[in-house]
Amino acid sequence: MSNQAPSPSLGSRLRKRIQSISPVSLTLLGFIGILGNLFPELEILKLFHLFWFFVLWPFVSMLLSGTKYSIGVGTDDEGPRDWLEMDNGWRGHVAFLLGIPLSFFNPLVFRQDAMQLLGSLVAIGRHRGSLPDPETYDQATSYRLPVEGTWTVVNGSPIKEYSHSWFPATQRYAYDFVITDEEGRSRPAGTDTSIENYYCYDQPVLAPADGVVVDVHDDDPELGRAGGFSHPLKQSMTGNAVTIRHAEDEYSCLAHLVPGSIEVEPGDRVTRGEQIGRCGHSGNSAEPHLHFQLQDHPTFEISAGLPIRFDDIDVDTPGVDVVEETRWTEPDGSGRSIHVGQRVSDTTDGELHRSEDTAGPSEVTASSGLSRVRTLSRVATGVSIGGFVTVLAGFVVPSLQTIALALAGLAGLGLVYQFGRGLVSGDRVRLGSLGTVCGVGVAAALAGAFAALDIRPALDSSGIGPGMFVTGFLLYIAVWEYKRRDLFRVISGVADK
Image (cartoon, rainbow, N blue to C red; front, side, top):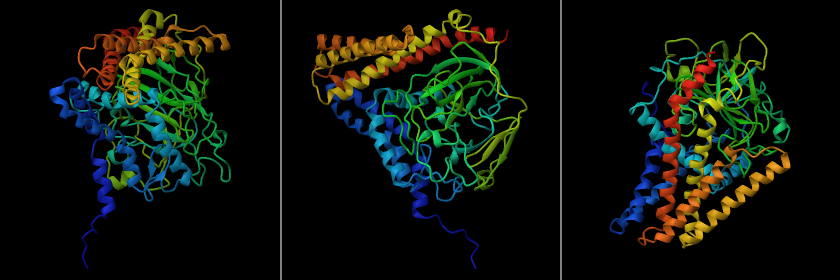
């Protein structure tokens, strides 16, 4: 009798082959096509625009893997999630497939998606070609779970095969958390997909360590139903989110929070275990859950994900133990890594609290220029959005001048919306909230200037649009990189007082 292990099936080999290919590198080849638009003698390079279709590669991979639908990814028939009962059936697959074009034609979400892909290159460059890994990275701070009670890890692991998303780099070591019952359900059996039925919905989300809040997004709407559906008019993949600086080049990002539940503002000091918001269904979310990640940069799009180990934690593994399966060795150091399929509980003694000793925006934000940085970054975002709209409009409207007028009209509508919302709510319209609108206005001015110059036929929407998008992205990087060191040196000084 042969002891030779059976050869893997064709489907298994295909899945591994798919997972080994980086969609980031293939998608970025699409930028070579821009040279074909700018220079007539290089027109053949326009063929490289076909590589843009590789942005759909992760979705194709999921469909070919024959997986069940879960929190934004598939669930293997046999694996660490096999004990979970989170399959939404055909409705989940339909919702997922409908979400692809909706996300692609949503300029706000597509801008963030594309910036993640480009941002992976920026992160790789910042780390000189070698991204942080669990074996060599030594975290500077002790972290607790960002939730109270027992939660289930439905996505995420420092092991590559089971990571949340190995690419883009920002989400490499991210986690998705939900609450499940003993049967592995995220909502009671027999209930519909109203978000209030999910166990984790509206549960407190906590600061994982002491730190200073550097960014807050609390403008995203939330769909009242889940089951694979997210709000079609979402403004961000992360939805309502909080970013906290804990140490030099260590930031946590807590995403998909309930609209209006965030209790902190940029510049506030927070303490370990302090409630900063509530778990929700905003952004790119299939059902209520908490997306949590540690990153090396204050911006979600151009950061590199960092492996994280948690203190004071109990772990239960109801399904396949990926640690045993992969023979993964826990790196030296304090704390413990967690993995997909595990149920985890924080064992810290103490109650939830809201710190009274905070450094308000007047003390930190004004002195450090954080508000100005955030406003300028939103202007850069608006320029990139204008570039994306220019590309889309170019398929319908050949005149760059007409597109410039359309962008100006879009910026005007944005101003009306912001001031109208301020009148309804009674709140003062802040400069930061107008940043994106101003950026679209800048894009309109650029498109109008190129239309007036009309230097060569190649300067049409198919060349100008990508150029504006990249310009906005580079400005986005420049704003944060120029200010980052001095800005957070000031914040650190305040936080240490």
